[in-house]
Length: 182
Ligand SMILES: [Zn+2]
Image 1 (cartoon, protein in one colour):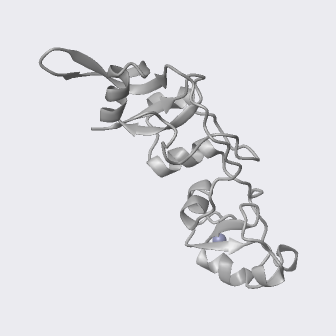
Image 2 (cartoon, rainbow, N blue to C red):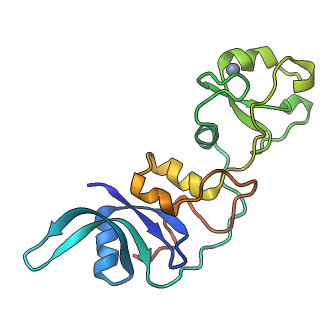
């Protein structure tokens, strides 16, 4: 039935919830509708506009989370499924500084890579190859991670999402909606 973007009272995006859950939050007066899609959900007694974006009435303090968890899926999402050396479709993840050369398994040292570049690079440093990175790998913005796990972005959410990536994950956002009242 679709999903809605849930904002904190401060208008910071928190997570994406099923529309049904969004409607329940609105009915319980825990959230208000910020943007609606024009459709209505009808029951015997009332009709409720279907929300695209809702906002919590009371601010929820979200536990600080310094890093978005590093996973293959998350790296692919950050790098738009593109090889960070040549731009072709990525199939592998590559350690920029190879682990055998002391490279860490961290956001700053892991990139999506195609098989060819991965094989070309082997256990060498970038300076020992012809390859170069298209952009510096950084930890993704946590909001983007939330959106990446939710799949596509509804156009109505865009005004409420920060654009681009920030060098550090900001406090706050979790891939799950654990901090949100039920
Ligand atoms: Zn490549």
